[in-house]
Amino acid sequence: MPRARRTMSDQAGFWVVAAAFTTVTAYATVPTPLYPLYQAADDFPVTVVTFIFTAFAVGVVFSLFLIGHISDWAGRRRMSVLALLVSALAAIVFIAWNSVPGLIVARFVDGVSVGIISAAATAHLAELRARARPAEQPVVAASVAGAANLGGLALGPLIGGVFAEYAPDPLELPHVVFLVLFIAAALLLRQVPETVDTSASHPAYRPQRLAFPRTSRAAFAAASTGAAASFALFALFTSLAPTFLHDTFHVSDHLVEGATVFAVFGAAAVAQVLLVRVAQRTQLVIAIVCFAVGLASIAAGALIPTLALFIAGGVVAGAAAGIMFRSAIAVAGSLAAPDRRGETLALLFLIAYGGLVAPVLLVGLSLSSWSEATVLLVFSAVVLVVTLGAGVAMRRSSLPATPRSEDRVR
Image (cartoon, rainbow, N blue to C red; front, side):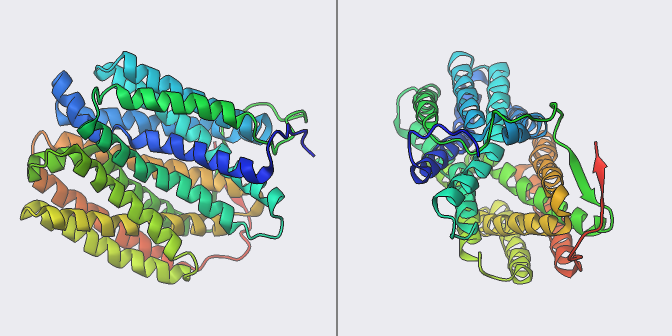
């Protein structure tokens, strides 16, 4: 048994970890409605916004691959505290260095924090809940972890929009507030019981191993493609939605910008909760239909243009992305042998986060040559084709009950 410092109960610690997790993920999307303000202050084009956002995605991938897995022996609590302190560092960079280079550095650092806490806090929540309520199904802890992740990402733009629209110094005050929250959360988190025996011997450090199923590559490719396409939709709204709303629909209210992104992520979180007991094949059908309707509405709303249609399309497509991403995790998990499941899911997450980088960069670069409506139309068409293909392939795949072996990707 781990030698845990028990200054609070496992049940209380469970909710402290969930709150800390939510705070970190919320801060990851707080800058979304602030980007137009940074653009106006530093006079840079929309293409630069995509590079700033990409720095965040690169930070997440870097962290997941090199740092996220070491909580298995370094300790869940220790790594979550580290993530909060890294988020605090990002806030300090935002405050002290808000030119383009500073924004890129701050977003990279913030991405590192999200990668660290996503692995550590998810495992910590499952272990604390299992100790507090041994008879309870693991789905409860998994649902809370999912709500902290997607729910935080949904709340961030709304919080940023409130600061941008109503608060003084919107490019500094939100970062100051979150800096205080991070420090307070780190101090409180130190009182949470540890669930890993950090005194035990552990293997030498190595980067996260990645693995894919040797006999089920087509099914895994479909799952990872669907996950990447879902993240591409989230990335579009997280990075460029305020620009589209301002230029295409002439929206000048930053709260509306934040609320739009909140609605997309919120729809993803709600859809996951509502369909938790629905069969996976049925969920994939719902995701395919919602992607078709949502992406068509996004494109039509940009062409007409009609703001309500654009937002409604984002909400429907966001729900589809949430369903598709959870289905992709389920498919990848079922393909993996038990002793390689973590490595297989790590590969899935890295591919999914690739969907945060390449599509948004291409969209940003395309905006210098084509109109926003044209770019959105092409983006919607590409994502629709990809998600339709991935969803149909995932639904039709005959998944082996006991995968035989896997190759490792080093």
